[in-house]
Length: 429
Image (cartoon, rainbow, N blue to C red; front, side):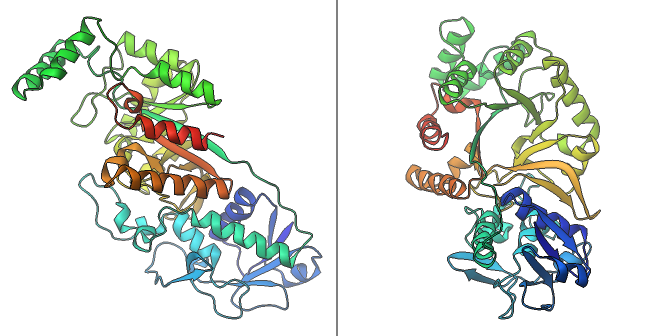
């Protein structure tokens, strides 16, 4: 066990040290604020404070982990080898920067509590993030830092023990609309027909009625195709179904539709089925309860995993609602228009509520690849280069690589099907 001395064991200190040592590096860590206990410890040990006690491994601490609430933070970027870093520590520290304060700043989403410009949907855009501005959005720098720290510690303490964690690839399938044309009801079918007519979309109108009369399958009915792909590669997919009322941004068919309910049940026989919250759902407790109940009654199981439609994640409000309703896992930690790591880690972590200074039971998964972002890249070559870089970086640190796609990505009309297939081939094993 690595023993850490610090002058004050705060919730922030315990939280981030456990994330780095226990969840990423797979080793035990303990804490003490008693010098005599620290001196008597015969195993690997580290001090995390303002001044070094003796000749122990020493990381000079910044103030961030000993504060409460939010304050202005001055960020000056530097480099640790080829990896960007911040919160420099000076020459007396065994690390050139405070890895723990920097990791907490990124994982807690500290910057999302600070004043920032929102996009048209009220979301925190990637362009406002430190990672985007300094060019490390596509790197899981917290994990990269942790593995470099491990190398330094092994050199200092050859007897230190670290377990090896396993790389995982987890595909997520968003189902905001289960069918293009089927089960939409007479009114929506007629209005769609009129839009096609006045927009001169003759081919789409022909496709619509070919599907409705049973001459061809619905383009979005790709669930059996996903089942075959996941079975072939030994993957367990996770499907997120939208159970919302129809609105300007929520276009799925009625959750009471027998065919829709039957579809969800059949998908749940082979894969995990979870909830996609509606456009404004995460900010309204009653809406969350209603949509969760609809899905739970359909699959006859508890629903404890969730994603936000349109990636409408509002920190801290969205997560506080999920914690209050005892959801266990969230899969929204990504950006809608950019590929990359919103929290700069590819290791699942527990949400830390800075307002209450507490680690919550809600586990958050980073989703660096979302197909909604594909259209915001200039060329397919650039897109593939970024996807391959992200996937290889996750593999390098044996993290969890998540890719979220809509059910339309492998439809007969999709122009992104090949990208999905390449990612599955390259990163599923």
